[in-house]
Image (cartoon, rainbow, N blue to C red; front, side):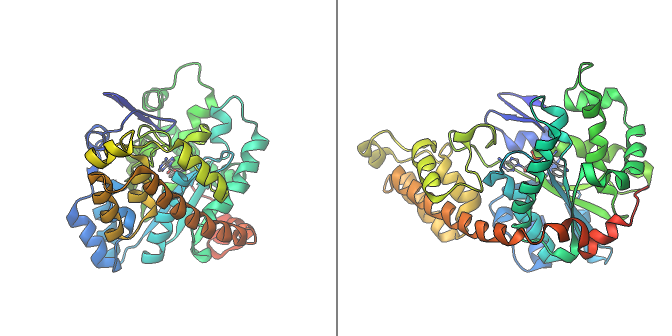
Length: 381
Ligand code: TYM
């Protein structure tokens, strides 16, 4: 999984990721202009994350659209391993999944793996990961899912319904495959060896094709899934992969909850956002005003510009203006940072309101909504 100067695994993203190379390395496919246009034709518009290629790679997305056109439908599945506080990068798959749900009107399953980080991280207690799950679920609901068609479940609670399917999957996977896929060794605890079966189970919640929107770091799980799904009578899971929102303090790796200066948390207040961006945001601008006016900024490494491009500035003309003026030196780093502060705070203000409302909805998404109720009655075999 390591190539050149970067590494992408489900637990670590390091270095400047070459996404074109990653496509070849992981054996996925680039989302072509033609496929993007096809989606636009079917749903009527194109999400900014698709247009700007933060979602850049896929497997079988063309077959998902084909199934859809033929009336066979599909379902969406994504997830989260809870930690103390989600950052804005974590919202990417959830916002995009909610958009796909709105456009296609399909079911969404969201797995909260409150077991995963407990087993991987020696410092986390199970009480902590379960507590964080409840907190993270508020941010996830805030992305705007349809209550009747969305089921959010924690592994430690829903395990009884998943277990028969999990052991069928586990029986098909050898230790040597899992070891090689995830870089485990004989000193790994046996929980983490079994865990991939639990992340694969939801791909088999329905007998239709499953589409997984997620960061490309999760891809190893889906490779295993695709090896065994058909032998169990299910579809190989389709995926749509995103790039990583870079950390605030440098263009390499991914924003990480465990490095506070690299991340803006969804609960950061406006002052903290301003302080973090002005102080830590890595700039591709020149060190002095004179040099900036003369040479302009290097946008390839400029984090504020990349955040605006990938996430916070949806208006194409405005992004183009910033790009041209910043690259040419007409605009200074401080101005671009100020624009970003404003956009991030607008986003977080809306998010806070939705998160507040989400508090009344947790029970419904987990247990009492239409899909949730149905799922609790169902044992997956
Ligand atoms: P987790 O909790 O590490 O991450 C949740 C989702 O956020 C994506 N992500 C990012 N996307 C863009 N920029 C970033 N900086 C960034 N950081 C994280 C991840 O790719 C992921 O999509 N094992 C999983 C939990 C899980 C799951 C799933 C994820 C269970 N089932 C199905 C996706 C689909 C995990 O640890 O995710």
